[in-house]
Image 1 (tube, rainbow, N blue to C red):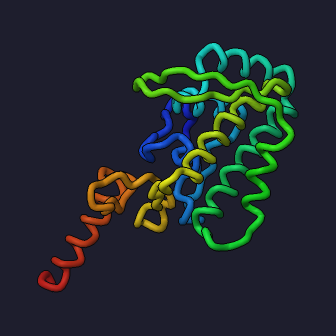
Image 2 (image 1 turned 60 degrees about the vertical axis):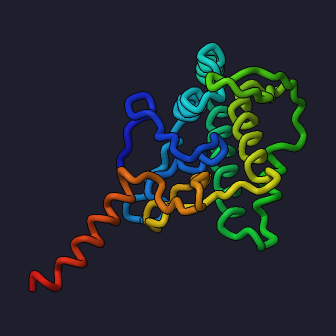
Length: 207
């Protein structure tokens, strides 16, 4: 399945937390015939981070220039980002298993020197941002990893669910009053399910 660039079709940030939205950088995870990777280049990774408010426009320009100077390092950063994403997905899908997912997450966090700062987001909340003091191209990885770790280790645990449409495979934080959210979006998977159910109800009477 061919997908557009995030520059032309901005990421659909529906999860309620950047660390969970990052897990949705794959289209139709549960349908092999339609599955499509969105992180196809370092540029796409940077665009996603800007849209998710994890990088500033100034940082984006700096990273884009750095990636052009060091394309192999940039490509490695993208592969690490994908490994980080898949490790987090594995943890969510198999929460009781003693898998290599935790090892993969820790590998991304270990051995790096950070500078932390606190800033206020566009929504008015305070957050801490980690900036590696070494490889500049790793900056998106550490910002994403920080968000993933925050949501996975929150106390009490946040209710991270996957869309009821198994072909979709997107994740979201369920903040509904009765913990009843079932779909990534009602406008897509939700409406499709309602249409199928309506058709199924009408079909016997029509025949």
